[in-house]
Structures are given as C-alpha cells and as structure tokens.
Image 1 (cartoon, rainbow, N blue to C red):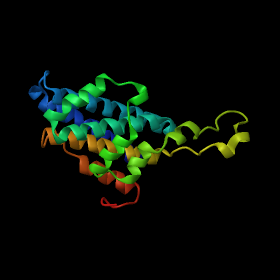
Image 2: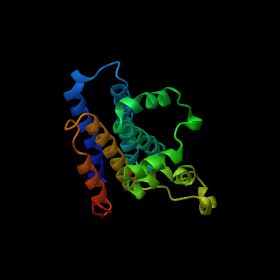
Image 3: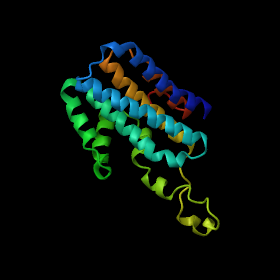
Image 4: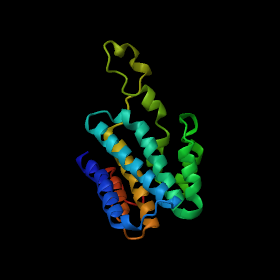
Amino acid sequence: MKELLAALGLAKVRVDAGFSRIGRRLVAGNAADRALMTLAARAVSAGNALMALCREGHANESLPLLRALAEFALAMRWVSVDAEARAPQAWTELEAARWEFLWPEARARERAESFGMKAWAADAAFATASDFVRGNAGGLPWSHVFSESQLPGRKPEEVLAAATVWLALALEALDRRWPGEFPGSAEMRDRAQISRGQRHDE
C-alpha cells in the first residue's frame, strides 16, 4: 500500500509544479483554463481525501470519492480533446450540478472506453455502489447476525490503484492542454499496473 500512496501523491506534486510553471499564462476569462483548473483542484482534493481514508482503514468509505475522481478526470480529458469548444459545456455542467443527475454512468463509461481506461479501474469507480452501501457493515455489536447479507467491502490497495489510474488521466488531460508541463501520467499508470501484478498493456 505504501507504494500506491506514493504513486497517488505524485499526482499532486506534478499538478502543483505544472500550475506553478504556467501560472502567468493562465487567463481568468478563458473557459478552458478555468474549467481545467477547477476540475484539477477537485481531482487532487478528492485523491487526497481518498488516501487519508485508505490509510485509516476506511477504503470502502472512499468509494464515492473514487467515483467523483473518475468523473473529474473524465471531464478534464474530454475537455482536452477540443478545449475551446468543450470547456463552456463542462463549466455549465459544473454550475448546474445537482446530486440526482451529477454523474450519469452511461456517459462516464462511454468516455472511459474512448480514452482507453482499463476495465478494472472503470469498474472500481462505476460498479461499487453496492459495496459502498452494503460493504464493511459488520462494525456494530451483533452485526454478525446479518453477515450473509453483507459484502466484505473494497480493499485499500484496489481503491488506491484505481485512483492512481484516474489521476493519471487527469494529469494527461493537463499535459494535452499545456504540453510538457504536466509529465508523469505514464509513470503513474505503470505503478498502478505493477501493484496489481500486471504489465502496462493489460
């Protein structure tokens, strides 16, 4: 788990360093700059909170943060394809956010597939709602009576590996917008894959 925490922490270091370098080039009235900065800040913050929960043994409670992180990263990567055209729509979605329609799964899965996200990372973000509501539910006295209806909950290594891949996608989006200023996405993906005992292309 230590290696995954270090890999995930690398994202904040790279994002901070990149924005420090390009800061004078940012334009307050530019929709793409504003959307990518806001989404990057939210992605890094969600990743930080997720790490804290995993370190304290609450990986299952971090699943909503993983889902949020995936959405922020996907929005960033989607904007980076055609930043000037897509950023206004992304910002409109952020301004109109309501819990009941904030993260449509069909759209997220379509974007994830188009950007080559690994199935295991997508499933960790999109297919874990039941784990969140029924997993790790044995902490109260006499909860063993209902053990057959409980799920074991997600392990911290699984959540951290998926979060690392999603933050790598966010870093990639920033590097597409500002080439050469936000390196490290491939390294983060490789670390996540190695933690799962897989090669980069698996």
